[in-house]
Length: 317
Ligand SMILES: Nc1ncnc2c1ncn2[C@@H]1O[C@H](COP(=O)(O)OP(=O)(O)O)[C@@H](O)[C@H]1O
Ligand SMILES: CC(C)(COP(=O)(O)O)[C@@H](O)C(=O)NCCC(=O)O
Image (cartoon, helix red, strand yellow):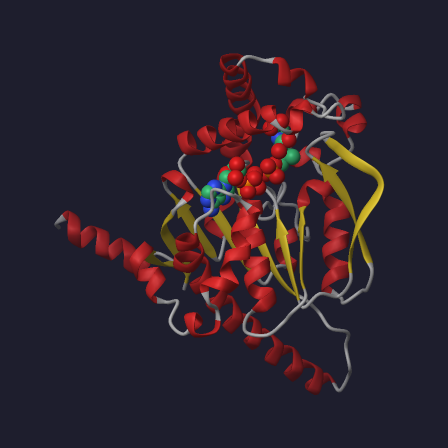
């Protein structure tokens, strides 16, 4: 059998439909009639490196797809309530975004939040990151697991699952702890309030993880309606991590409250070596052991190439 035939047979049995950048951007279809460049420009303020082309080529078709799923989900809820003969509280549609440290999860989440909040109707879209469910720094130190930050043992997963269960049962006024990248710690007595949004986006390394496979165990993904994994080759991830570290060294690390204030004094070369060591010993290791193995469970995989541009989209059939 020729290589070409083998590849096309493999595509047939894959659970994903595969699109390159051009094929995916075609699926934007009617969106431009509703959203003009003027509407999209404010999105660029999240990130000075983000391009308008990336938003319209990749994120507009994705917003279009999600809107179809959301409408369908609302219809199903109405049918269920009619069947049960009850009035249940409003339950948000939940989207999760997984991927390595520094792949751009927060940036993708903020783009989607903004698009879904304004098109095709005005909707309340809340976003949180699972960082808020990390154990406080003192606990990580006490348990001697500071070098495992971001690994499954560093999160209070039962608290995260309880939050997801409350959210999915329509509870109002939920409190979510806040993590600060500046202090490298949970902010004491500070919370985000999540109050019955229409759509909820949960972003974090761990959102597709399934723990140690106990029977009857409940996972974060049990509460999620649509999951996205943002992917890139490790050399790119490491490069983006180091670049972000260097950016922080000039900005956030110079703040006297920064946990990393001593890094502000490093020379550029020393800073690169430090970031590279943190990557190899913590974030890269976590990627291989705990994050990458969850990729194929996602409903959609966005694969980025250099400059963060998405080169391939895989959508679960
Ligand atoms: N689409 C994008 N275009 C350009 N730069 C991006 C994009 N997404 C992320 N970045 C940059 O990559 C780095 C990591 O992004 P971030 O969203 O903080 O990642 P994560 O939340 O996955 O750790 C940041 O420096 C950010 O500015
Ligand atoms: C808080 C995190 C686990 C989550 O990362 P994120 O994907 O939000 O950037 C990570 O930023 C982190 O602190 N990792 C530990 C090693 C490090 O200092 O990068």
